[in-house]
Amino acid sequence: MTEKQLTGRPDPTKPTESVTSSGGVVLNPDGHVLILRRKQEGTWVLPKGKAEPGETLIQTALREVEEETGLKELKVIRQIGLVRYIFLWRPDDKNYKKTVHYFLMRINGIEQETVLEPDFSTCAWEVPSEALKMLTFENDRRIVRSIVD
Image 1 (cartoon, rainbow, N blue to C red):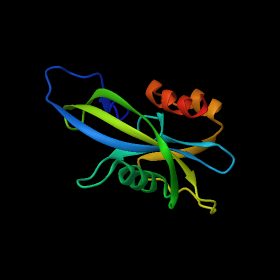
Image 2: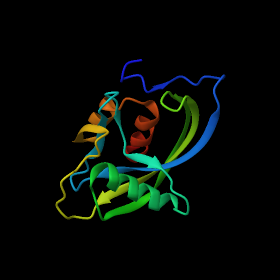
Image 3: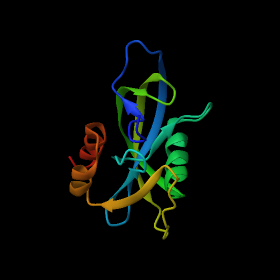
Image 4: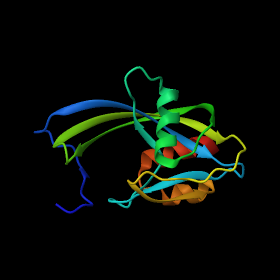
């Protein structure tokens, strides 16, 4: 197995666990969307992550965006929608049935530098039309399309 093959198609012979996550479509003052590139798989994604016990969906989204990007004091505008998918996570040898809730967020007008988690190699602030071309997964593209439609 190469490093790039962390995820795969669901395997019906493996156990399945349900996971709830939250994330954000983060806009800067110019209306550009923040997207992140995963280091090992090279995929372009939106920031998101797993909910901790006792957190609300908004708290999870804000915490995860901050952990993955270093951006703080973001303003949540509204909930955008959710996506559901299932995948095999090879390191755990387990399927995950994931639900991700996305929120539209804006930087609160203060200059901030992104400081990425080690899982990410780079980030980009793109106009929504360019972000749609770069994002790897249709679920992420659908979420970004929902803010411009």
